[in-house]
Image (cartoon, rainbow, N blue to C red; front, top):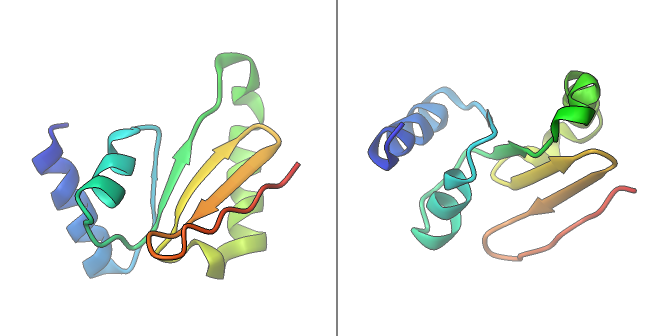
Length: 95
């Protein structure tokens, strides 16, 4: 999708109060560089050899940290999660 389509997806997610789950790193650019409001974005970075645990990992993050995900940009990798907010730029790691 083009960036304009990505912007529309973010706008729709805001309207519907949904957190986006994606593997598209362009959403990081849209949320931070262009200062676009965001309902929350979960960026998944799982290499091929770790894909078997992707679903279980995402479900676990949502169950354990649902309230922290709203409005945040979250990068989920095998064994690690980084939760960032535009204003505070706080990051948290799970090992």
